[in-house]
Structure formats: C-alpha cells, structure tokens
Length: 291
Image (tube, rainbow, N blue to C red):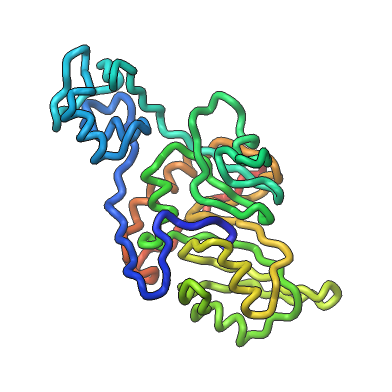
C-alpha cells in the first residue's frame, strides 16, 4: 500500500495481533476522567505506565498526591506529573492533500519536507493517521486523536482506504480477479481488495482503476502491481473511511467540517476488531469539499 506499516504488521504464519477496544480522547469539560487515561491522552505515558507513575506518587491533583483509580476533571483541577502540569488538548482533525515528494512523518532526519509543513502553526500537536509513501499523493488525516488513529490503522478493524491507481500496460480481467482474491507477497497473502472503474488508455498505454484495501502493508499497492507485471506510474489516495479527498488542491490542508467529524465518529464506532467486512455497514460518502 502507499502508506507505511500499520501498528501491528502481520506476516505469513504469525498470529494476528488483536486490537483493544477503542477509547476516545476525553472531552474537556465532560467531567472527571481516570487519571491514567488523562496521562495517556496527554502523551506522557501508556495507560499501564501511567498507573505505575500514580503508584510511585509522582502524580498530584490540586497539590496532593493522587491515588490509583482516582478521577479528576482537567477543566477545573490542576493535575501534575513531577510538578509539570498535565494538559489535554481538545481533539483536532485536519485533512491535507499530500503532494508527491513530501514524507508522511512529523519530522525527518534527512531534512526532507514533511506533512507538518502543510498545516498552519498553532493548531496543536497533530500526527498523521498512517503513512503515504513519498512518491504517492492524496488524502492524509492529521489528528491528535489516538483512538481514531488506532481504528483507522489497526488491521483487525479492516478500515477502508481507496486509491486511484495508474499502472503501466493493459491490465486484463484475470489480473483484476487476482487483486480481488488476494496476491501472495514475501510477507504473506494480501487481503481481498475491491476493484472498480477500470479503464485502459491505449494512447498512453496505461490502465487506471479504483482500488479499495482493508489493510496497510508497506508500499503494498506498488509491490502487488509490480508482482503482477504492471508497475505503478501514479498513486493517489482518495478516501479514508468516510473522508473524501474531493477538490482539495495538492499541498493544501483544511480542518474537518463538523459533519465530517460526526461521520468519522460514527464510522469509528461501527468498526469492531476482526469483524468481517461484509457484516460492517458501508460508510456513507460525504459530499467532497470544494476547497
């Protein structure tokens, strides 16, 4: 696939890791929340590590040492870890149209341009929900919502991602059937994919089609099409779950509309670990933004 490895990369012959139930980022002003959940949401530690911090007496609420199992309201109480105040940013969601040549990371040791350059300063500590390889373009969701990121990326949730693919040569129907059944790669057989809107351009000698996947191996589409004898010439991600790229220009970003956030929330709640794709309601398509 165009994006990088999912949180648990599944290899042939190995047991698939099971996703944990999805928990949302605590909403500010919604009342008391368990301290370990607050610490995890603020990025200080995992839930389990946060429990160890509380047991060690390093967490305080209103200046007093907190106890394991205690809850607090971050909107009205001062919660601190080793004297440093713990703050939880409200959930934030941006969609960007990543151009080819930009890397889908928060920072890059080689000094290459990253997706962080496509969102304005001051919007908070966002991260890309998944990867899109440097040579590909299209939709990338930027968020601080870890639960949503887990639901969209973990293979057990089988969240859909749709791509517009252009490959070299004429792809025959029997080759498309192999995509629909799954193709064996060095790291195991791929999950069945959905293929639609196939079109061969005889003048350019390329085939274009829409491909929907429910898994996210490293450069999966490129590796699959190369194995099938049709190297990828262009790859654009046009959908993640209910989110559509629409008319958002390459190199641009925008915050999600309220209806898109509601659709994402509904979609996430519809996902269940290891639930068969056929038994999950098909995500409703949102009207593409004209931005």
